[in-house]
Amino acid sequence: MKHSKKILTIIICTAAFSCTKVTNQVPASYITPANFYKTASDADNAINACYDALQGSPANYEIWGDGRTDMMASTSRSAGDDLQVVSGNVSATNGYANWDAVYSGINRCNSVIKNVPNITDPSLASRQGRIMGEAYFLRGLFYFYLARTFENAPLILQPYESISGNLFPTVSNRATLFAQIESDFLKAQPLVPDAPFATTVENKGKTTKAAINSALADLYLWEKKYQQAADAASAVINSPAGYTLVPGANYSTIFTARNTSESIFEVQYNYSYLETGNGNSDNITDLFLPLGGTVTAGNLRYQPTTALLNALPGADRRASITYKNTGTVPAPFRDANTLYIAKYPGDLVGTILYQDNDRIVYRLAEIILFKAEALNELGQTPAAITLLNQIRTRAGIANTTAVTQAEVRLAIENERFVELAYEGKRYYDLIRTGRYATVTGFTNVNFQRWPLPSNELILNSNLVQNPGY
Image 1 (cartoon, rainbow, N blue to C red):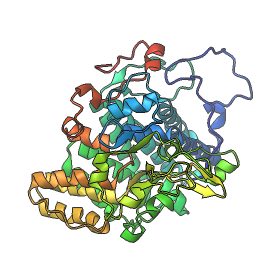
Image 2 (tube, rainbow, N blue to C red; image 1 turned 180 degrees about the horizontal axis):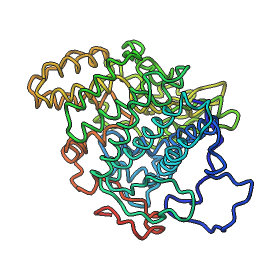
Image 3 (cartoon, helix red, strand yellow; image 1 turned 180 degrees about the vertical axis):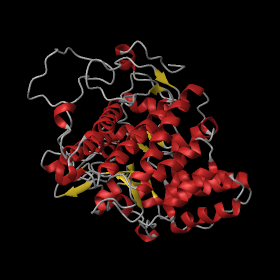
């Protein structure tokens, strides 16, 4: 995916729901929906701006999905916000409790959905529907993050193009958000082909039918629509796009090589853009890597937990890319014998370590486990065991000993823990299955949703803070 810098200047609001001073006159040079959406190229730039928003605040997506669980331990360099995440007791002023980038993306998607159908450029005809499908999918995905993380959030379906918009929306609950998300995904599904683009990086970094079906399977598991979840997962597994698991011996390449045969949808970063001052940095690398010695590296804000280390012994092929130790000769890092999370190693180019790993949203291994979970809940436990063992065999470990439905349910949960570690899944898994307090020991029910950002409540008196904050 190209990192489009032609981001639409169509929003007059500087925060998610607050407005700065405006005038009634618009300069002739100002870009507005009326004078922007004219050509096929304008539509391309508009949808690329939606993906650009998905690149923003990458650490938030990871911390929302894995923080406040048994996945992350603190270090001597953990800042106050990080210590709150590890303890589970997150405040509304925590820097990770910030949804600006998400609502920026939603606004851009809303703009595409409203305005692209009005473009009459004949050269757009062959891809106009696909661009609409991309916008519906991305809007649904942005709201899926909000619904899972905050539980309650404003539902905004029109772009902010003038001061006549609703600048002070109220919140909608998770059920309402889920209904809209499902609607968006289903609208997107027939509009986007299996492999819509000419290059691998676009087919992995932009919307495909498999990306939509992956998100639908995820959503259906939250809604306990198990047959629909199994069907959506099967559509991905059997996709004409031909996704395949990376061989076990090459497992680490999922995170170091980018856009492998297993990848379905991953947010793209590339050091070549960073070198020229374009694109965004994936700051998850900064959170996880140790301090640099011969290179500028990370800040080691988080380390693996004992629970993760015990669940993922060194004999498991996944261990060597999930966590590492700097060893007695720590180069390029500063400190010896330091344990760190290794799935976001960055690109070392000369003496510069670029923080540019892709952030994987969905890959085939997770979809196989989605189907296993759905089939187990449907009473098809033997079929679920077969799928579970497919993932374990790739990891070089023995078949599961689980037999009963309850045993397999727990085995799938544990397999997701180690297979998808630090990919932003654990918190959401434990919330949707009702196992959060049991697994984490955090019995405060309010920990099962994040606080609405404190600055948003200051700006919008119609917002109501989540309970317990």
